[in-house]
Image (cartoon, rainbow, N blue to C red; front, top):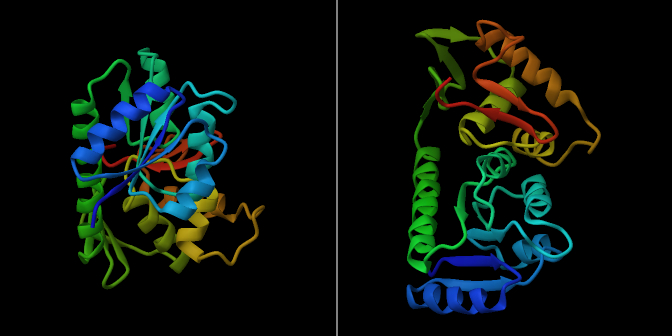
Length: 230
């Protein structure tokens, strides 16, 4: 099945150029000129990847990215005319999977798309394995047991599910709502802050200094991130 790309950019000439190029490489492309309907389009079209310009009219790309990450883990590549490191860092901390400064060649964008999709496919393959290894931890999914330096660490059912969600999405920011959905399904209230309690308990069990955690980082205003190489 052809992979579907959602391209969000207000530059009409660039959109046409990229659509023509990506379609020639057997990708489906859906386009938007602003960020107002991005969430609705993701829900309806179910793209495998989103290409999102930072400099959009109305809502900028970073605002749109925050909205996407509140509801979806779809891979996102950010496009920007800004090349400053700070802008790239903000995008990545908000959950972008890659960052491509303008001007760029369609060939480079295609290479980035393929690379991000390959990472997603490897993650999906890893989901089928019985172990997750990251950050010096081994999560045995068959027995629902955590190993830290070859020693078993006792986890509650919810702690296990929260840690599993984090370890399956290493170096990616997950919002509290995303973590609760992954851990508990959708049967929770939007104002439920118990995820913070579970994170605190996990840090007490996993971190040498829970007050300065190396594995489970707080990304202020966004959520939590599991660092695969603390």
